[in-house]
Length: 141
Length: 430
Image (cartoon, rainbow over all chains, first blue to last red; front, top):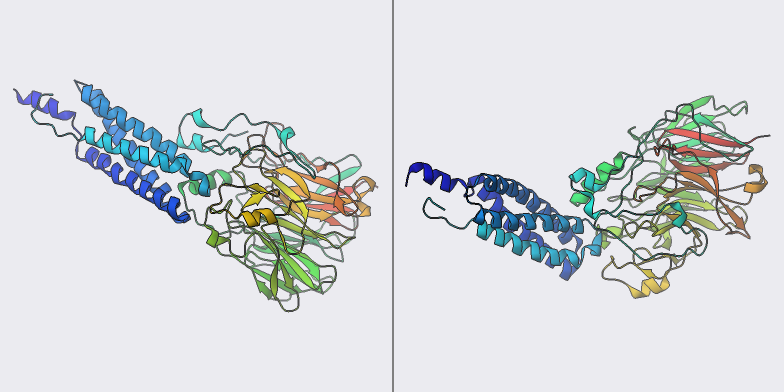
């Protein structure tokens, strides 16, 4: 096993910045979900405002992670695991964007679709990060 | 016409846009409009008409009438008042301090600003005078300045009353005066926190005893919380002598202009209704304002049509909601109201002129004109007639946007245009 092979093998794993962006999306989407739950049970509009901003932040992190994932995917020799991760993250981003627009509606028009979307998007983001950050041992994929 | 919707800004394909709206002909106007189902795509429609100068063009008026610009280069003229000696007072300014609460507010604010003037708020009253009666207002002078977004104007008790966005004030006035003698006197503080709808409309009872102030809601549909709506969406009756106030009518979303019917002494208002329920909901309206009346906002519209966006709802309030008198069409943004007089000519003698600022959230723009609503027996009756049009070009750009309208008893309609910063005067040809 040459050193060249090792570096090529590791190149497709998320780098540090990529990891921060990817891992960051999870608590942001979770925060949006919890805020939606709070609005749903209390009718206090501020929770809905929090949810909208947390979603916007999540989409920013998610979008940048998606870009990094795309670059990794294009550069990877073997695209199998990379492709699954990329597609999960893409689905998270697209549904997250739909959720952003849903949260741009006024008052209770956000509900119930906004809450349902927040649950789905949070679970998707968790799954994407789970797959994307799967520990790799050894240099060869 | 420049299409600027949220999608274009976010650089996303047009897959989800709420397209396919029909034109103005789907608008239900008159006393008993047929209301369509509520609809809301994932994105609200926004269509901002790109401003363009008038150049040597003028608005279009009916045959037998003429229009001239009697003042230009103003600083956002909104409402006007004709004083007993024929001088015209123009309130100039822009108010509001509503915080941007959601990402949507940032984006929508940016888009809407494209359809408005770039001129800074004048916060002043300008006086226009035509001393020799030739129709040219040769004197244009600042009557008072350092006001806070003045909007509603009324004259009574030898006082000029001005509704700032936070306070009703008065100036002592002597005939012929061209400049206020000093700072104004406070009559009453007005609700001003947030001021999502900041304009404070104003009129006075025929005997000068009561002033009526229209106070708009603090949101489209309670998206700033119900707490923010205390003392909002109301018409106040204020005692001119003491400043004591009481809510005269409630649930009246944004009463942007008030006027007394000249014969019956009945208070009327044009009211702007809620958005984001579709291109043909909810109609803005002209209505008589009943003392103690509740007009539905936020719980319902046009009587008992429940708005599901308001939770928790209030069935008792819905049941109590009064159906307005007369639909002006959805999103036309009626901002001006003035009752006509015989001097305006037979066809336009009995009724009210309504200034329509024009839509910003409807695919096919509506409004952008001054209409005449005929009255019979003190009530609106029959279909409206276009009176001043041509505010939009054939290419879909916007030259001007009408706001306040005022009938001059000498036989003229004064129209404030807050996009071109111009005051127009429509007269009957003799």
